[in-house]
Image (cartoon, rainbow, N blue to C red; front, side, top):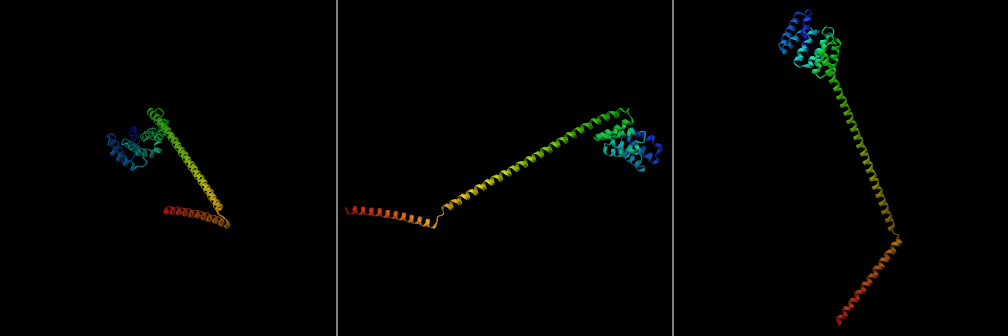
Length: 244
């Protein structure tokens, strides 16, 4: 960040109140000695006396930058942006705003601020170098963001395809299970029908049942008579053997 804050202070000294000038001068002395904490207090005192003071905010931003408090430095510069544009040091303001943005890696803000600086002072070589650097970083960042978005879209499409395939497989499995169940039900129904038909075929009329019973009884009678005859024959044979 440039040290033009001190020059700006000397230029606008006649416009400041005595108390504010004292605090600003004190802050400048502390700033030169590297006493940034004390300089911060002095600049804030000067700013409290005149909140519209471009010089107080400008010097405070420079002091915050030295402390690497880039976020607060950016806030102070942004607060003085409109009034700083009306001063003779507007180009230096834009340069410093771009410098703070580079420290924050806020490449878009850096490019915009340095463009304004070059419009006001086209011969500023440092501003040109910083502008080219910030612009390249911005392009690199945009390319990374684009690739990241493409990767995210690709991942989303893959996830959607996987979900669709999973749903399709589930539907196919459900249909297959339903078909198997239907086939089993049909087979069971056919078996039941066949069994019922066989039972119906086995059933006899009362007359047929009586005839079948008589036939069974007659068969049993014949069998019993045959058994009795065999027993009698065997007994007779034993008796003969005994008589001998």
